[in-house]
Length: 417
Image (cartoon, rainbow, N blue to C red; front, side):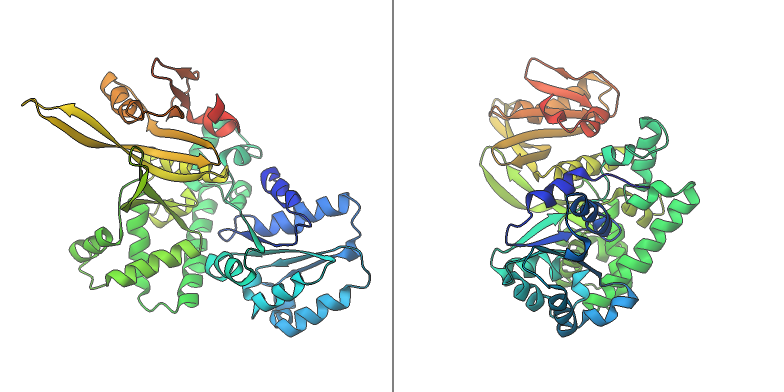
């Protein structure tokens, strides 16, 4: 099954020959290798690049184990550069290459090579690349399939597609599986045998049970304000654990480095400043989140919020949680103020959008509750409420647009509707 990932292909095309190392990152099984070694390689061949000028190595394959030695791989690459024409070097799972920074740094000095590398751990890639290459590492982050990408190959209508997507997420292999048992076993096995095992081995974790407990706590609390201190209280009160605050912070960082979770900070709209903790955690793939909870807590409203967050990130937006003050007069005639939450503030260059994930608004009270934070934002940037119901896109007297989750996810220009 071939899934087009045109957004990422265009990002690679736009970065060709820019003198930088193209670093393609993302959670394992999100499609990084497929993008580089299938889609991008076919693009190169289709545009007249001789196959001898495409040097590709998948370093996680046993037959390529010897190339994890920096001297061996560097000698091999040099042996393939037989003329002055442009060569395209594609390296998969480059974090498995010892001293990969030195190898890549040396390749940067060759004028006729264009380098693309993939990896599954930000600590070994994006952070080090930025530091080591002083701005000469260019990161492209790959997410699991967006709902639009998912539906492009889904055998069914968008309603059944949504039900599957909300439950099993967007890892590409899910689309090729025919029944629920296959999907559940795949996600459970992937989390335990790949992600957890990888994190434990890489970071020399001894308290594996505490790591699993932390993942479960984060999975149960998507969309809720939290921080390491609150999580510590949960460990002590519910799990009777003596885990330390520093260990919790370290484990959260490990999960972020593996691209399993992301965090959204709170932003004071009127004060124009970040508030700090508490913040919100979201899973990069909701299917993996559900698998951690045994598919027992697939609360569609919370999962929908996570999906909206991921979609905004997929489209390139920086996403924060908004806070806005509402002033009112109490029963005693005194002026008061309370903080209202805006689910997301999405920023990209000069663009900004305020979004609420409402799921449903069955009553006037619920409608007013969702609109209140947006009404109290005084600037002119667009304000949007996203609901599960299938409705026509509409705008009210406050300039607030309400749209269906399907319009939002399936129309790449939905923020402009």
